[in-house]
Image (tube, rainbow, N blue to C red; front, side):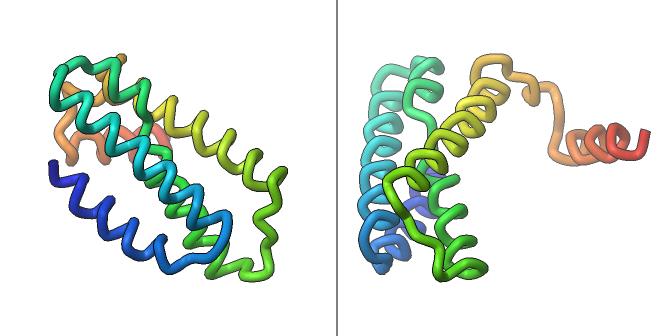
Length: 121
């Protein structure tokens, strides 16, 4: 439920964008909201993978592009490539968290320590 608050705030910002970034953001937000409602009604964890939160990754991608590459053209090809990469990354993320449940046995501090240990191995 808490995710819905920050996602709604992200949507408010995205509604200020023009053209393709805005249209894609609205569609991805609607998809995630449908997934959230479906999960809340069914309780089925597979729903979280079937409706991945690509909206969040799209928002961060567009915000970064608008900040660091304001002349970037959101052509159909560039948009499709970005969405494909972001979707694959988010599906991997959702799988690790919700299907494999790889982080269920970690506290946040233990997860950071494990990552640090792996990076400094």
